[in-house]
Length: 311
Image 1: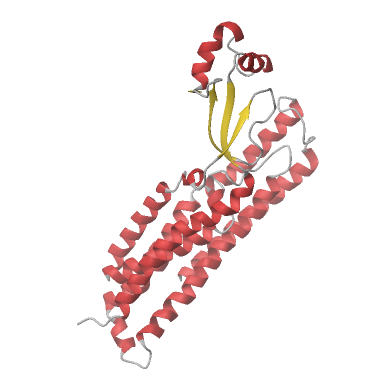
Image 2: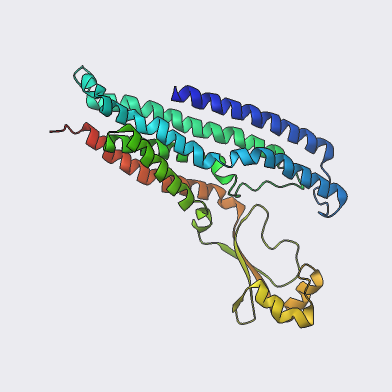
């Protein structure tokens, strides 16, 4: 039943994303201005507003999936898998037959674990092309964005598999279905919010210093970490500190090139710390490891406890 329900939900989601993506692609083909259009011109502004609205409508639905999908997989796929057997005593009947404990456990875990992993990959496989339909210049889809990072690549599969193993382990350790489900939901929520903004710390950021006026300090599709100002001595300042210091000689309009040139002439430099777009897969594998290593270790403990005869 869990497999059928999950498959049906993925199919419905795929249909929704297909309709949304085809609509966005058709709109982009007919209305996309030049890739280098100026943002405040009517054609460019109208295009960006419309694409933002189109991606927002479905994006609000997708935004809950990185939390809800693993939690549901862990609670409804993983937790009852062994807990219900122990709770109802049906495992004892199985173990009196010719099936060994090891074979009984492998048959339960391996098949469903593979199905869970494929389900996570399927989710990424339908979200990725949907995002690509919107990624038509001058509109840009940043896959480092926290809205999309856990919906593409291998991270959805890692979250789903880790939640499944967690649920299976709690079921084996508690041997009661409802407590196992409750603990699984709680741990999934803690893990999600604990790792919510973690990708920026997966590697030391690169640093760019702006000493002359340029359009973009940080490359496109990069993951921004922080930005600040420094003086000739390398002392850090916030943008508010610099604005107060330069209010007299440079004015107060920080958005103009004239203000930027004036600030540079007074010895200030703007600094940005970021992760370039080519680190995307490195961060995907990093988060997958953070999730799967402890989950599989806990699963190994639970499997050993299950296989060991109780005295």
